[in-house]
Image (cartoon, rainbow, N blue to C red):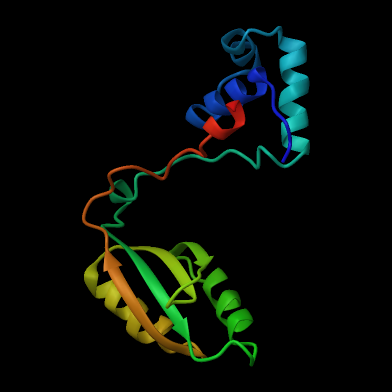
Length: 158
């Protein structure tokens, strides 16, 4: 695991909350001058620690009223089904995130759609019809209490 000093940890923490903060303000907030702060920032980007910056959108404000987590189990893993499934999921705009999992299900998908009818169409006519899909388990999100969130940094301070 890479080692981070207090300046870098503070920088990562601030940037997770405000990725648009100018380097001059960032430097002031963490207690460095602008040039060394900019060098550290560029080094964190080059190392792949800072992967990029993006706008955080309100799904409801743009009409995505239904948010679900869908667990997917495949029939087998020996015939290329996982790769085929992954390729298909990467083309599905409704799927915002996908993880491979241990346990009873193979994949966990985070899905957002405008309505329950669209969810039904997505699950029944697209997801369940993919080759190799054995079954799905859908969990409707009632309320998002926290997240999407920051990457925890507390372990870096130990």
